Length: 582
Ligand code: ASP
Image (cartoon, rainbow, N blue to C red; front, side):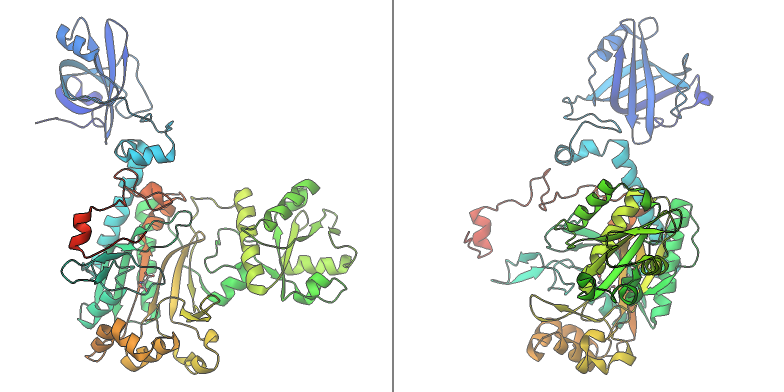
């Protein structure tokens, strides 16, 4: 037996016992006549003591050669410590070592294996196995495992069956680029890696599985914006014979369960908000509702004066920043610069100070009197002491800009407390979204999403207005899940693909297998997928998903530890009938 106990286990009750421990040398202190070593494993740290008087001499000599991260095994007696360490659970005891075995030596690690390390991101990724020894990363992985296990428990208690779906498939239309894999046996042909198991889970419903889930890797070859990974994990789910309401209730249940068992937080029923309302109130389809600062639309109270900027704008919209009147002129100027940065893209910002005495002082006093500004305050629900920030322009753009400002200010004001959880459902998403680049409509969710029956007629006349039976679960300003009720009828699916610009031949070639299956008794069905990486990060009170992934890729999609992607040799290329043309 390598060890009788872990390094997080021994207490005063164990004093007098002979134990064998194994682990890594966290640090050692050599006082000449005595050597202390902190021995670490996943479970904790136990202090070892090598004492000239009580430990065999050759063991003391060996202990002097130990370096950081050496792997050792020791046998000795648990004794009470003279000076106790109240900060760790094993801090009242130490092991008086009788026998030391070095199981493996270690080079000096390239960064310190401490909670606060001196290693930069890239270095830590290169030596991820060392990074994983550090508490913050280790604890995140343990946390992730707990979320996954609780998810499995909850869903299997609800009769969901976990089914694995293939990884070498045909393109799935989740709107990103596919990763492809050349097929050696089928010359010139390629598999695609799944962007999600979407079509397979629908086929499982047609196969009668009734309730399916899978914790599954998905692959999307996108330009990696901050905090995206080319491979990520979904909790993917599908149910048959359900309406939207059934799905929302089931997965609200899962989310509530996770918040309770993982975070110890009980949350009330999740509010529901339509997409339109979310856009109007927060300029965002994943609003952070931990704080207010809701938008106030000012067209009616700001467009009647000589101020051309507002008069020419499609939308004039503002937010009240709590306590913002305390900002100096300089700070406000900085804010204006902030919204004008290319990443935000506003042309400028108008503001109105709400003074303590009830008066207002705005940057457009030339055009607006106190009565006008009082109306602005009313619409934006500003109180005295607040600052009203107003943007104007194209409605969609200006909403996105003001949303960015709202989030930035809330962060600065400390209103985005990671320990507070504010989930909500956003429902009634538009079915289609206009793409400027290709000049055609795209499925906002995916092509299998069912339009709202009452909006079907609009498909021909005003496609952009058609709403879908689609929903997102939003938590603290992040989309953590999204899904829809599906089309389960061949003719309707064909119609939808037609609207998305597929010719009947293309539709058949890409999705014929699904449409054929629809002809063999497809039940009504719908589902959802959660982004597990992000869900875990948010439940863990953090923002970056990378910290919750054992072996993440860097911002250019590289695994710098194993050095992938990498070239393949000519032999392999030949076997695959591939020629590079770089
Ligand atoms: N497959 C969808 C996605 O990955 C989720 C769903 O519709 O269930 O977003």
